Length: 135
Image (cartoon, rainbow, N blue to C red; front, top):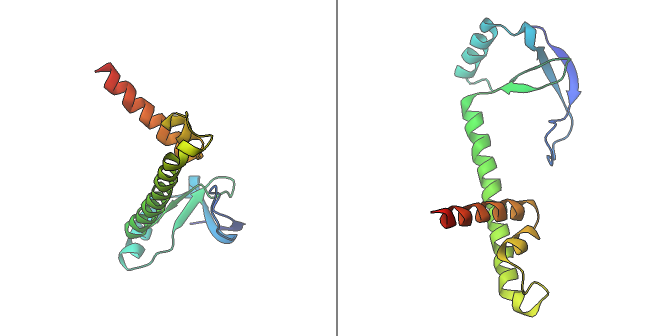
């Protein structure tokens, strides 16, 4: 495999990772044998990802499945925490709405005022209400 050293961050919005160095395998040089070699390394406990892309830009990574599962659990936990915080704020605002400018807002408008997660919730809530209405 041909590798090029180049410092990159993870190119993920909102991430707090520092810059780090990766070896980028050009996509056109990635062979079936390389994948088999990586799988054998993972079976022996190696965890180094195989990062590939074009123009020396990391675009994808092959990682051990156990690492993928850990990432999914982490993402789910982070989402659940955000969802819980959103629900708590929504409840707080609903309870306090009688004495504030938020009185007279629909639940969807209130949710939208809480940011992107609120907008997503409002959109899903409206869609669910529309489905009930259409039945």
